Structure formats: structure tokens, C-alpha cells
Image (cartoon, rainbow, N blue to C red; front, side, top):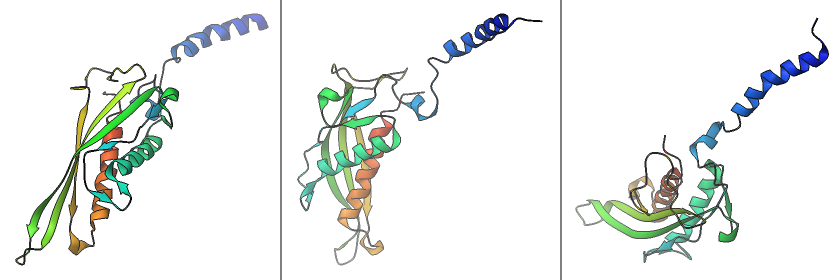
Length: 181
């Protein structure tokens, strides 16, 4: 017969490697993102675009979409000040173009392509660019682009096409926050 004290010592000896071995193990979507970052500050994206919708420009709409996407897809929390954040995600809309793709015989546009280009930087509190893993970022800023197709015959408007492109841009920007495999 094994005494109660010996059983407890045996149980502790078997459990100790399990507990210490799992201390750094991550699972779920937490494995996709930097473990040392918990909060992100997203200042208003700057916009070099002259196109605006009523009372809201592209930079404001993109900032809002990026914040929503961060909260939805990542374990990070968006905070309202740089002092409270572990990292800062900044962006600048550098190009906003419209190009006619299909034209009717009466010179009316049947399909217009709208394109946005955004320069994005994600840096930690010290200002160094966050680039983890074996695949480094090519530069301090990353160029992200997205196009949307405006086809009036399908009920598309300029506003709906812009919003679709902005939402897809936000998804791409938040996708850049994932760690490489």
C-alpha cells in the first residue's frame, strides 16, 4: 500500500511537467497575432483625396472600418489614446482614382473602377515597426490597394462602391497584423 503523502508527491511530480510545459502554449486566433501586443491606437487616417461624401471623408470612413475589423477579428483592443496603447496603427490614403472601364455609345459610363491606395505603418510604443517571424516587412510602411466596380445597371452607387472598397481595405490592413507562419 502506498501512503497518502506518497500519492500526493507522485501526483505533483507527474503534473509539474504538464503545467510548466504549457506556460507558453497559445491556441485559437491568439496564435495569429503578436503575443506582446494587447492594445492598438488607431489615429484618424490621413487622406490626400479630394473626393468626399456628405460630411465624411475617406480617411474617417477607413479609420472606422479598420477599428471595427480589429475588434472583430483580433484579440487586440482599440484604445482612444496613444499613451494607453501597446502599438499604433497609422495610415494615409495616397491615391483615390476613378477610371471608366465600359462606356455606352452615348458616352455614358456603364462601368467605373474606383481604386484606393493606402500606406500603413504598425509600430510599437517605442516607434519601431512590428515585424515578427521570419518574413520581415519590406519597408516601414506597407502599400495596400483595393478596387471597387461601379455598375449602375446593377443598382450600384458611388457611395456603395466606396464603402465596399473601404471594407475590403480594412480587412487587408488588419490581415497585415497577423504574424507570418
